[in-house]
Image 1 (spheres, rainbow, N blue to C red):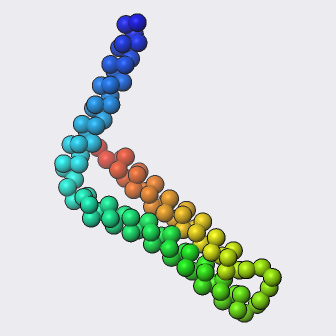
Image 2 (image 1 turned 90 degrees about the vertical axis):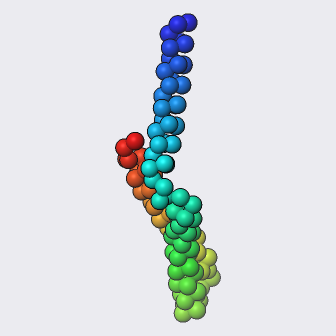
Image 3 (image 1 turned 45 degrees about the horizontal axis):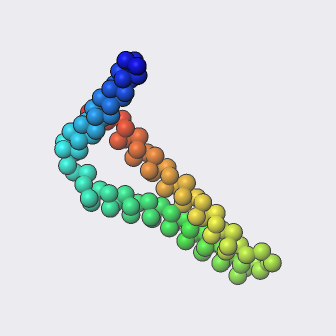
Length: 104
């Protein structure tokens, strides 16, 4: 019973320490505010939109030049969305690594 209580107390202590460290870091890094968050939303949005639009444009061009029973526009749209999502995931993971690697 005593060991279980000690484990819970230690877990709570670590959680409180982590939250306090985040709070201290946030106070030191005031330049990462609302505008930084909005900028990241924009970066993620554009990193998905650009490959999607390129895929659509290339697909339309292929469909006009070489008509076939398959829609290259639709296929390249899907490929563009997938590539855009992978690109956005890359940017988010890089930012997460930067945030995680900072010292408190």
